Image (cartoon, rainbow, N blue to C red; front, side):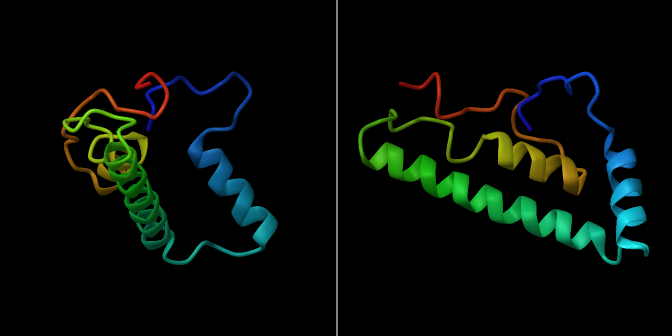
Length: 95
């Protein structure tokens, strides 16, 4: 969700899922649901953090962080939706 390249040596998503299934000893069931659910939860938390930071005066009132953050961009990607922005707002760099 942050647009950074995967570090050298890290397995791909497909390799990670294959290894997880191998260790689990069975196929993953409803993985897409769990992936979307995790992305929704993370997005909700980031929205709340961004809103709290605005309310505390740590971010400007028009800050994009509650809506455009790494979690919301990841959620859009998981759902196959066009994200509202290519650039995510994050806690660091906004101080």
